[in-house]
Length: 427
Image 1 (cartoon, helix red, strand yellow):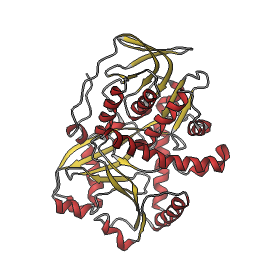
Image 2 (cartoon, one colour):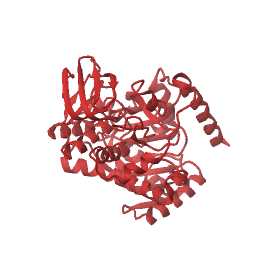
Image 3 (cartoon, helix red, strand yellow):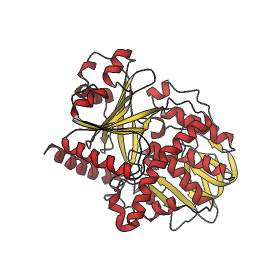
Image 4 (cartoon, rainbow, N blue to C red):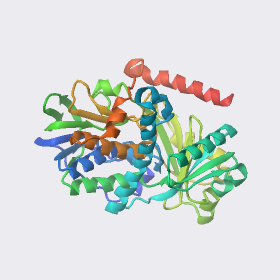
């Protein structure tokens, strides 16, 4: 029986109920595959609209990226949205930017409405590695204000950086009080409880082995079968071979986190004086924050090779010490990694299969999964329930290429491409 990764989140999680395996035959309106944020939030939104839902998770609820990510809740969906102007127009790009704000609000509202205890803390700062980054932040700030972003924003000059991060690595920053950080596994567990309370039937250790497409979809596991009018695939980086068409459009990329021993109040205040989540601007970015018990959770090193480092702590600790050399004698208590889903254009892929219009999907959040999954859940539910969903139609219009090289060459080819971008950073 598969259990959660040996992460800080697993060690500090609320009680984890064991949901049953699927056994026998079940008939529902909608079958959702994937027990992460995409699946859970789609299920919640569907149940709130009166549809019967069964959710199948191959391992444990929140087992994948949803339960082991950096815990950073950051505004926005996608990167460089202007690239889609030729497909959805300037008004469509404008709407995508507004949906990036709405995505965070959906998380905020879900947590507040259901009183989910997940250490939610507001405050985030983008960190500039070079002057060009800071100029970009100034432009971002003006755009956010022009879009009506209602949360506090502050551009930081080099001399102000110590107010946010106790390091000399950065030349500026952009504070956003409408973004923040939280305990992702506890959020997933809380949302599973919400889904169950709404009548969603949750199944764990129930890996899908085959899908029979048709007017009514049949979804098979080792010991059972779900018949449904609609199917939602929310597996992201762990889709594997379940649907080759979708699998070819998302690349699993490894991301890794270490957690220190609990720090003293003084140590924590020196590192992150305002207890914000932060992220730098490099291709192989660093992101970090403090946990509720004052551990530094330091993550990054997005790997496209398909192979995890043998010693994650040995790999990540030098990166942490480059930023915070004062932690040289601090113990690392936890080390873990997992796969995030990357799309070629870095926009979440939300849509339905052309040849099977009763099959919907969401994947490839490219590092913005905590908020974008919640948005995807709402848009998918609107579309499945037959409601007009301008947001769903907008995402569905954007084409997504299949990564070249097939299953075995996709990762090496992308790793080569990312190396090129990293070399350009050094120029």
